Length: 141
Image (cartoon, rainbow, N blue to C red; front, side):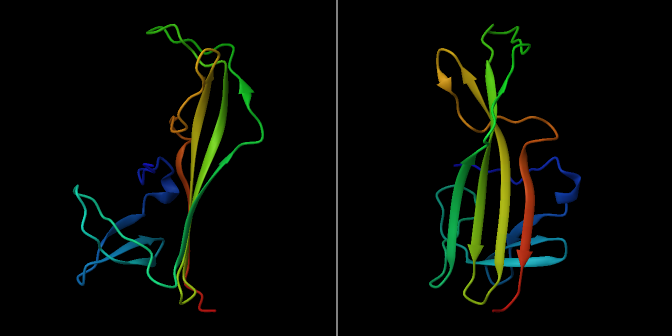
C-alpha cells in the first residue's frame, strides 16, 4: 500500500517527515512532532519503522456510503470511462505507550467499469484526494 505524503491541501504543506540526529523517524506538523521510533533497514531508499512494544498502530480502509454516476466522463484515449465513482478512505492511527497519538486520513477515488468492476482505489483528483487530514496529540494519559 502506497499512501502519499504529497498533498494538494495548502493546510498540510507544513508536514515533514525525516530522521532525527539519533536515527529516530519522526513526523512534524503544525509545530508538533510525532516520533515513530528507530529507523529500520530497508531494501529501498525509504524510511522504514515498526511499532515499538506497547505502541498500537493500524491502517483501516473504508468505502464512502454513496457512489455517484458519471455519465458524462469521456476518455478520448481509450474510450473506456468509468460509469460510477466512490471515495475510499485510508486511516492510519498510531498510539504510543506514553499517550501520544497520530491520526492521518487519505481520500482517493475508486472507479467502476462495467466490464472490470471496481478498479484500484488510488485514483487522484486535484484538490480533493490524497492526504486530507493530520492530527498529532501528545496528551499523556
